[in-house]
Image (cartoon, rainbow, N blue to C red; front, side, top):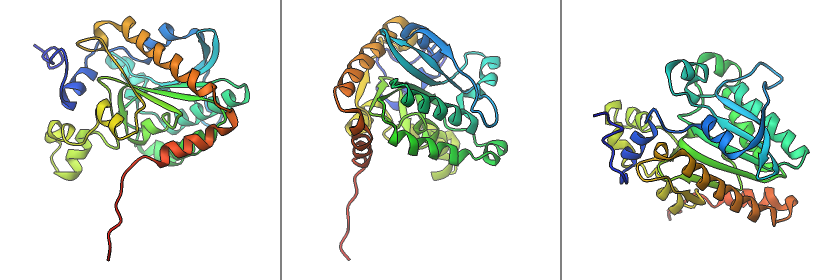
Length: 278
């Protein structure tokens, strides 16, 4: 029996959810896009360096409303994952995403982002082409965009690589998704110098959808079918669709010009700190 098959029907721990995320049949953005959006047309390239298979973007219709769709791409087999660099985007991927976001703002289209990445790619070429600047630029510009932005974490929400598509007005997470500043393996490697303790790390760093809702980072948990999204992708898609419909309705009731300010306030409220007395 595989690790994914041995996961309980209702996962209780972060590690059990991570095992579900790794199920080879778990739906990816490429599965959800045709179920959620009509007449999707993919657009390519960042107009600086090239195209990036780790991020797919384009325009389509969500319940007859024109929208811009941007998503991390995961593959099922080795060849698909090689083509998408295992969903780890290069700087040109984030610059492509920003180009499409700016286009969405120009034509008054809401932006829908589907997040599923272990993090931005940290190879030499990516660093030479300005990886950190590209991710940071996305965060800065997304904070300023005068158009609705809704993001959904489908599986992994890893570090700045996820945040490059997740500065939004409303963030939803699938119930078995996780969202963190670093992967559990990276956490264990840095803190304990022992990557084999990733299970222990996952269960200690508060990365589940429930944790993120409690911290005020996630706005809604999108319930997956019992046993995970792969058990019924269509039902999961319908749950995501309901979340998107409700979120867009609420956002579009507000003046568009006020969105950057309310988005800024949303993110400034994240986190708790105490000032000690000297």
